[in-house]
Length: 464
Image (cartoon, rainbow, N blue to C red; front, side, top):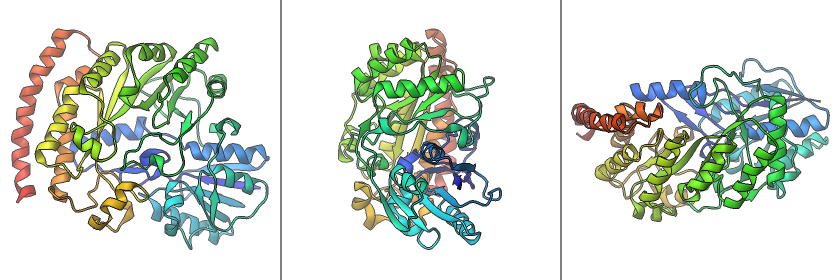
């Protein structure tokens, strides 16, 4: 049986799917010069293949089925079964592609968080929609069962029982070892060491599909060893929402990597209060190159109102500083437009992002994703009816203090102020000399004054 697995390449901006926004995905629309540059580099260095499809490919390959991966909707061969990875930000094109495949006589299904939580978007376009993690449904399909309608696929309880992802079947090739920023020029290998999230942030979709589960250290070590065997010196992207949740498990994983003699580099996402200098040192020796983490807002009260436990600023600064000294890149995530936000609070968060000194920062507008507790709270305020605009960069609800134009203005200002300053270049270059760093901070103040004057000019039509 021939099986086509589709992760259609996004259009109209930079689209990132699979585990981004829990699986709803995001689209970066370059509405300013700085965001245009950010988009350029994201397209070349932040593209990550789908872990979901790699697992599904492994399941079909185990049963000796032919697996074909497609990204281009105009370059799709005939097949017996086609499975499309869904996203909120590009669902119409995915549905059209599925419908075109059905017209060719192909049996078509949809997987992913969007399919699970918003199956109505694909009704009439596909033969079946998978609700849940896709592996259980994939095993039924690989065994010859014909699914129809909305199909419940239970969460995988014991993750060690899954076959390792087949990256060779979903478009991965040996990584280029030449020019790189953090990741190699090309794609890194996503590795899912745990699923779900143990936190309770009301705005986050990562925890709405299934609960938190973790693979054994030995099982993760076996997958890493296999990657190193097939792809020498791989760059691994741990896609866990909270990679360092269990400190002892992380220490054991470091020991596993070193005892196996594995040569690799990796990055991860976590909370800063789940890191300490000793753990970072161990992770660095095991191959850690970059970490990303949520700060979201400088206001502890704002964070508590959305179910996020604040991390003391002193600890955040200590961890970011330690990472810089150890040569570990850092990326902070921030959200603009919490209900308590106004111009002053957003400006304070932007200032804190700059002062914290992470290598990179990502800013997004608060988005009430379907299925989250935040959606239930804000649904009466939601005015946007085009689901593709729930991309993290577009206002979608009536904010009590900030109009849509103001939110977009502040988002653009955040990117400009963070990236267009001397200290960004100093941090990115990992300069340690304190005199150089102090001089860059001095020049930051002059550049900030220039940004302020430019913003005053651009702000007038926004606030009128």
